[in-house]
Picture 1 (tube, rainbow, N blue to C red):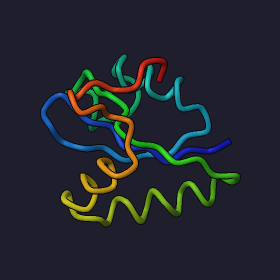
Picture 2: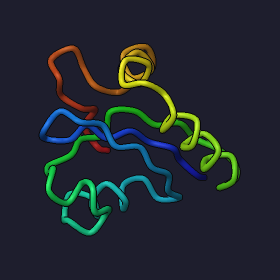
Picture 3: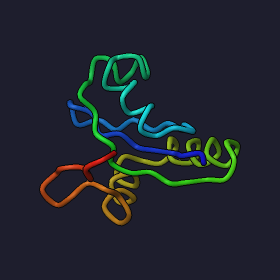
Length: 93
């Protein structure tokens, strides 16, 4: 399975990416090895993800989300995301 995801960074910014191993990628981001952008914005929390059959589909969705405004991303997260109303993320991810 392939995933497109949005992370909520410590500074309140959002980061979008794709992976074929969501838990491993989240660990990489939080250890400082995930992406240059998130390295200085740790810890990060998984705010949203979608599953896809192919990496091409996940990459296409990543491109679409990266071109959304911040407001559109926040609406996506609030309508389908995994962040609870108290700001905590779903355990286990």
